[in-house]
Image (cartoon, rainbow, N blue to C red; front, side):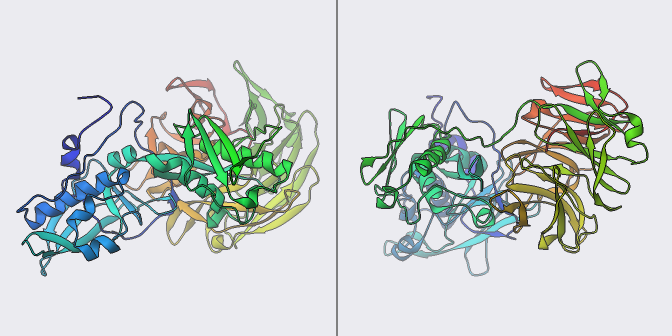
Length: 561
């Protein structure tokens, strides 16, 4: 057997009892679920039609196999299992429901004779390519009603739209696609993760980019796609690795600056797909030529100093020692418990959280300025626009942001936080999104919200929160380590101990090993940038898949952000 092809029989046991049904209870948010790497092989499913004389249960089993295989052939074989009326009305693309590979779906009969299926839910995919993870106790549950046709053969007369597949089959049939929009100042790209069928991913990714960002992000980002633009040619063709996107006439009058930005969006979006290495844009067949190539970052990050607190004094960690950044008398009495720094390779100003508020501390001098007064503020986060963020732990639905350089502060509405216990906040590297940990209704939540800004970068408000990490019960600390990826110190709802989790925004966590008794962490660019402080004050760095001690007697590790 060709190693690149695994015939249906190999996974028949996984698919045997899967079914099409509704996801109950519905829970979660737009997500990108991480699956095992599958770079060397694909699962090709061979759809087969109904078997003569099949029982009702056998027909359902055959339909489930055919519908799982139908992504690449428009579900023509799967419709043979349905009555003509059901075949005409069934929409298999309405939703893709996923269950874990290690689960076995259960098949049963209702009192009316319908065939029921039930299996633990993992996630669901909607028509926009947005994946939503399910809560830990969610179940895929539904039923099929069958009738006999004129030949006496069972056919499905009533079923839910969509298909239900195990995660491995989903991974083989769909490709992750990151669609990019622009920050308000048009200096960086903002990612949103989608999943599209592999054989049509370039076209669907282009359509998603043209359609604009998801609702929760729409007020915080921009796009260079002209209003009214569609695809003039309905399919994005890929030849010799170059994707040709033919846009409608609305794109023909685009300005040169916007054309450069448009190319940056389409190039970053489409070259993330395995079949695309370059992009050519045209308007109704006429190529849109650009003289300038923009390489906008989607994760603006460089090499920055690792900061800590040692005996309450801000310090920098080098390969050999911990060096104080200010003289101890300058911060004596502040009672610093957390620090944050901006995006400069050599920290010139540090933001510190003390017992009476938030302070600006000048490195190398004794200059200390109080930015925000308060005794119940959470640890600060500094964004790429130079604003320091914090908030009162007993939230009234307001966050505080202050311009570090000028000292001017603003109160930023976040209505969904009203009445919550704010625990921590962390602004994404491009400054458009914020992840927030808060406790409300006796439950700890992790969510992401868009930061709306004016053209100068001044924060205006936070948009609605999108829940993520629904399977986490307790969250101690977290940091951004990639454009949509977080490192999280947390306890899962099924675990009893804190563990280190890698969470792609809105995804089910992946656990990695951690030293004993972790209490705080930070990270910068990738897993190798992660550092962690244990209860005894030892500072560990993740290095080559293992943890090594790089400092002792420190607290509050911090990298820019």
